[in-house]
Image (cartoon, rainbow, N blue to C red):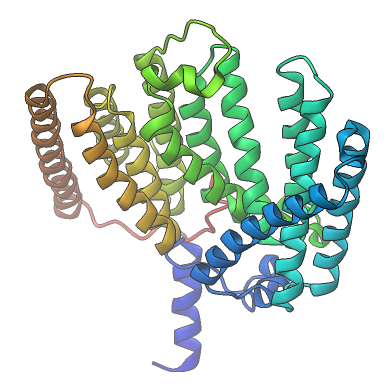
Length: 391
């Protein structure tokens, strides 16, 4: 195979979504090639730097408190210091450009300290709930867009989504949380390049990093919410304002199923397959059955959705997190002391048998459809279109 044939094969694989387009072959990605190369630190080092930045930020807060204890009693002073620290962090991020690890780590720690002072100022102002949460959410959303650092954007978007979940619980609309998080994860994670093509070229570098951070943050928050925080018996721990907490499991699971079907539509669109087709109808039935049998085990469908999205995007780290969350959720659900272990074992047995039957039907029916089509008609391949323009 010569170089031209290899390039053609690679282009076809990129067009059907099996591999991500390279910056050299796709003008959409060329705008943020420099930023991606500048921030090529391995994920485990970024995780280490993130934890060290959090600890350093907390120590920095303690240093300022000890140094200016008399001044920091005023909420206005806390607000001013917080704004100054965040501004200094932004300047350091601009100077480092992701190439200087020390400056980036220092900027991250200074930003953590500044956000801590902002949160303390909002608490000191004695704002009526949940106005303080709304203001902190807006601050974190602005930092997600403005800060030119992926790790900072990941943390800010995660805090933003956490504030949003808190507000849903405060307004007794916790059932919306799972569906909305799944929708954000699907829309941003599977539509990244479509989003980039719809914005001006000069904005694509920043929007690419913002969308990537939101995708990871929403997936992590979805796993956390579906596994622990959304459980009805723990709902009062999230808000703690004394309201009677009631959680409608079928409604929440229905919204999660709808978001999963939307993700299915986006994935099938990469292969020029409509959702309303023989293969699509089989997948719809499988997702619906999985959602119905796990209505009280919402983490099963949520973790499966994250794994499927990670598989579609070749995101190995996110897939590993989804698998760990799925295994951990099974153990957490089994040993939760709300009902007897015998009842839990029976429910898990029924779910497992149902999933095996569903897998057998899915595989057998899919290949039957393919064999029947091959035996009756000789189909010509559909023209290959890009994932983002094939709708």
